[in-house]
Image (tube, rainbow, N blue to C red; front, side, top):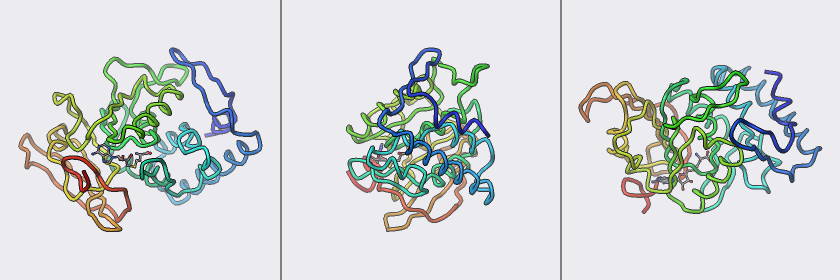
Length: 263
Ligand code: SAH
């Protein structure tokens, strides 16, 4: 995992097959080095506590979280805490973003829907796990993008879009502005996994419909200060053919929209 060094201290502009990757120019050399050290320490810590399997840690290494947090929080990019975004949203703590991937059981080739794009960080991690790569290790552009993410707030949609675009993730992520509690607008699409990054009082029925058989949905349920993170596994054709298990107690911002707790 030594390429972490190159990835964090790399040039500001990295060319890629069909996109020019632009990273923030306003990060000083000193700050970049501090971020590198903190990211490496966090990586070692996650390995020590066996937080998630190595293929998820690889995604953590590859995605520059400092490019997804608001500029004033760049120095905290590798502190394992949620950080405020705009419009009352937060980018989740890093360990939570990684655990959502573990719980959803995704692997390369899966098609994944995320509800609540926010900064775009979680979507980028998902893309690193599921999207195919060329020989140089770059993600390959696909006509049918395997990662779909939807955001209800216009401002956050624009933030997520701009973050994912500057880092060339749009070649395998489709992003839309809209109410994700109603599912992905193309109803014919079915997903191997759905990750909801906002807490609701129920699992929105349209989301269960858009799961493939064997598909997993991970979502925080509850309206209190703490919510219960649950995993639903769809086991048959019927809408009621699913199993649900409780994973752990978590804290997320409320789900809005038709099947949310706030309009
Ligand atoms: N996954 C994000 C975290 C976002 S916080 C990240 O990695 O940064 C939760 C997000 O869910 C907020 O941006 C909020 O606006 C969004 N959200 C809430 N209800 C939603 C809905 N019904 N559809 C789509 N997005 C929603």
